[in-house]
Length: 358
Image (cartoon, rainbow, N blue to C red; front, side):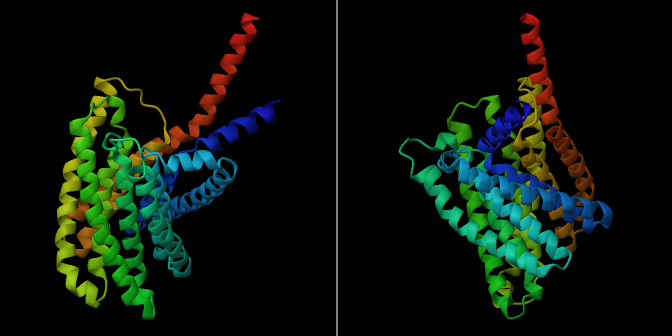
């Protein structure tokens, strides 16, 4: 009976698994990269193991969900509140690829870039159509939310890995340079579009405390990864596309870092208002990884920008923020690990109460 109950619970968890769970891979991978940058090798390797393990586990669970619960899978693709979360697969794949590139495992990183590149193109056309443009219900603007910025993160993650692999790509270096500039530029325009849509939703529709959920932190994370991608592009060797845009990319990257910095107090204030003023319960949900990743990305972006543009203060801010990001990651990971224990206690108490009534 217990095995049967456990099987039912596992199947239910897979069926309802949010498509944005790859944000855990993103958060873990970027912390691993950051720890490597500041020389904390042991912790960096440990986080790499967790990142790779989580990625493989989520691949299996996602495939299971697609095969066994296909209608739920496609319902998410048609949902403007969940559809854009599929882009976490693209970003998670690229964060892992970037970390593997740091270790010199370029063939594996290249394969992951190929997978993520195909997914980026397919999802980039499918998700906006299925979740937004193809819907008969209007207006869709009321469904705009922080997850829409994940599309930006996915685009910039392609640029990060393309720029990381460019120095070792041989004859493919010009192609990777073009890919890095192209995906970075697309990400810039997507950030503007997502920012407009989400801002209009906040101003034109009723705003409840429940609506300001953790994915709004991705608005800052999208800025930060734009900075990181720009810094990596600035560091690339001369190529026609790079030479033509290096100054522009460097300047825009600094502007995005400044805007990301400005957003952090705003997002913290919103969280305080949501949980302490309006008393929305603070409990574990998969979207909390959407806080851990942006904080870690902001830290790594600052470190890289400080090196690429010789801005030591920016690099120092990034280093300090990296340790704050580790604290956030540990809190979210601990809350996730406690979920099965808490669920077991609830079921035990329910059975005890039922037996007592009998």
